[in-house]
Image (cartoon, rainbow over all chains, first blue to last red; front, side):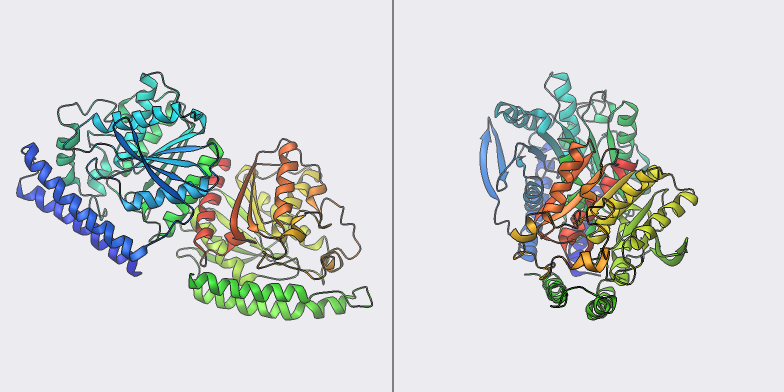
Length: 315
Length: 314
């Protein structure tokens, strides 16, 4: 076994174990906002440590990439600009259970996709739960999309994409654009997306043991911190419950070894039934949001190729 | 710099020196014996290099390998664990005169794994012993055999690199000519599309190409065509009528003398109404997608190949 893979799995399992332990100690309930915030902070520290570690271990330099930070209304947004950017742009919504900030892994991925597609990538550092529950994050990414339109990008040349919580926000944003009569982007790419906050799909149970990272016991806490007082039936939380007619071409990527596997499958099925142009790619051996771990899995490198080609063909 | 890439470039540098040495005798002409004598050292070298690569990189896990005769043509079949209903015909490169059995088996196994299709890679007859159109006839025979085996042509993908990219395209033209159903998609990788060497990159990119280079650029005409016209579209697909070709994805590197061959073909095909996706990787060299175990870029390219096949053949 290759050592990068071993280190990655060590960190992922550690993160999973801490969720499981915490859930066991308070019987799976989250009691109040204060304890939710302190748990989130602990989790963020662990994540930051992993981030730093991976930076030391891998340290990829993107020499031709220009990285800058702007503020879109109140939303800090990192702009990743490749050399000779064309007329395409990507709104890339990072993952992290609505709780973690913009990570090194996400920014590296953004740099790679910018290089491969010659598109400028906008990475909003949206507001996080539990401090800012739904719909704060969705409002933030909506603001950034609007600012991209104002900057003159043709919506047909924009791709919205994101993984995990960012995949959920990708789909929720498409529904919000429909409701608010804004033009849809040319394409969208939800990766390992959470599409159903009712969390009733099969894979939550059947894949719980093979998922090395996400434990179903994390669900109540996430619901408490992000959903808070809203209803899980709200399509902006559970986009699978929305009306999917008129969505742009979708490339849906998911791993076989993840508890939210069915969220992608079910969403793809419903979108196809609603006449949406859907390409579904399932990598049996892969874990949640595997595309981020470019230096670890061959499948991640292939995922980059798939995403780049899809953007090229659809926008 | 990464070590696998360094090793690969070292091997490629040797190949380029090998190609350069293959020239016509000073007195002109090129007999069959002279031609064979000129390619033999390179064949031995690529056989050794190929065996070494197979040892170092290995084949993809879970892919079954068999050697078959399809209508008399030796073909390596790579079957993934759960094959879908698609078949990929893979036509290897090697300037029409090198057999790349080992290297083609490695790549074919990863293609099979990534696409879940069954890959048939053709060990076609080589020049100069078997000049044009022997190799194309072999590819044509295998395609017909797959139709006979019951593969839906819409689920067949033809793919090949360099000389194999040339035959990917000439096979399409031949199928049109023979009024046989065309495949669902075709993916030429760094194809040679004009045996007249009309592409300007033949000279403008000669210095930056780490793989290909000929001191005698006309040599292939003598080696392969042996008097047959280089304007025949079945040798130079750029000269063909491209209407009605299936969706194409042409992949090419920026650092190669055959760069213009891809660009010119893509332009002509687009003008003929063909659905063309042209993928240029500026910092890459000739047939880089085939070096799966050596280059991250090859893995990225295989992702593109897999998605293209999925999108165009259902």
